Image 1 (cartoon, rainbow, N blue to C red):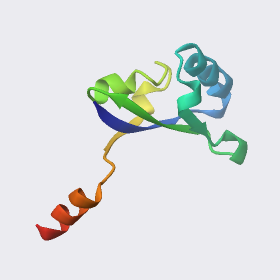
Image 2 (image 1 turned 90 degrees about the vertical axis):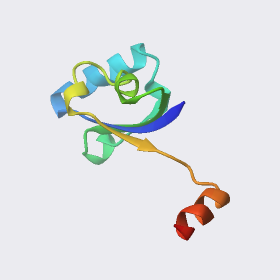
Image 3 (image 1 turned 45 degrees about the vertical axis):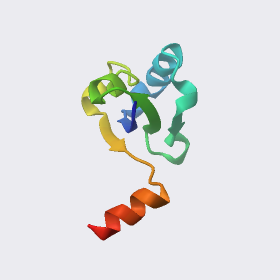
Length: 85
């Protein structure tokens, strides 16, 4: 399973609704939020088979504006191999 960094911005007026929808979908504890700092966005690392599946962690209200980044944690072996190329 691949991992994706999910970035889910939303408008201030939708903040409470987005939080409630993420909670109902079971992803509340996956997300870190920055609205208390004045930036209405959430970030999560989601395990999924592909980007469209990872996007399902974002409520329909914000999916069009969400960004997905496939991420990989490097082991020392992977890092050494990458630098030899």
